Image (cartoon, rainbow over all chains, first blue to last red; front, side, top):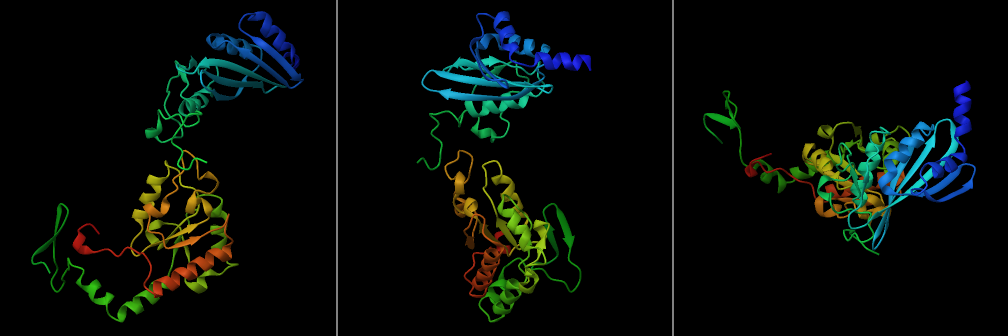
Amino acid sequence: MGDEQAAIQVIDKTIMIELSDKFPDVVSDVDVPSPNRAIARIDPSKVHEIMQFLLDKGFDHLSCISGVDYPPDKMEVVYHVTSYSGPLVITLKASVPRDDPNIDSLCDIYWNANWYERETYELYGIKFNDCPYLKVLLLVEEMEGEWPLRKDYAGYPNPT
Amino acid sequence: MEEGGIKLGEIELEIPPNVSFTTTSAIHDFIKDSPMQKLVNWGRKNSLWFMTHPMGCCGIEQICVGVAHYDTDRFGIIPRASPRQADVMMISGYVTKKYLPALKRVWDQMVEPKWILMMGECAISGGPWWESYSTVINMDEIFPVDIYIPGCPPRPEALLEGFIELQKKIVAQKDRTVIPNPADGEV
């Protein structure tokens, strides 16, 4: 019970202050719009260390990994991290270059990151370094390399 | 007619006495142009067993048609669980590029004569997913479709109406069923 209460105390917005103090040059644009929400931008090269830090602080649930395409030169990987013992959901955005999008894999920290990374890979072409099985997840294998959710995808059958 | 044995792939079978096999479609061609074909079609139209193969939300309506409330048995329409026992396949949902090979395989498992009903907007034109990267929208070019039942989803009565239209097509011999020809080899 004591540990549980300690964990609940950690899962609030003060974690963002700790995060900014621990990684001063990496975490930027911290915003806490509500007690349950926190948003920050991170450097893609340090995503592994940040996630390990958050997991040690009690954020044991990686909710989703998604991608955003900002042509012509930027793509974003968006992580949602939360906890089973607190209400705070942290949104972390990492910008990667669009001509060579790659970022470190989180599979050795969160076991469920594998499928999220594979789906982000098949839809956006963002490569996750050291992902143990980076292949298409739901698409047909022939469509690997088309990256259908990029803005400049031309394979739609009926463009409107 | 063949003398001696009949060859099925690697296996050579001995023909028993007083039994003969045909390798031509002469019987079918003879019946096709005779009044007996009307009797055959009458039997076919009154035993349209459909495969319980729900693919999307239209599958809910498809299952509803099979229950006692609509009593499809009075038209000879009975749900079957296996494609090998079914005569009618309903494409009742969006078909993705990944699902299309499996659907073709199920279609090939059905024995002729067999018919296809297209049920719902998704199967006919892609529906809300008609400009998706993963939806197959030209289903009528891939399968010999007889009846289109638009709706999102069509009501069970509409589906029954589609079956009755299919029965009319079978009686009028305007359906697109595939009659196997033994002369083509693989049957």
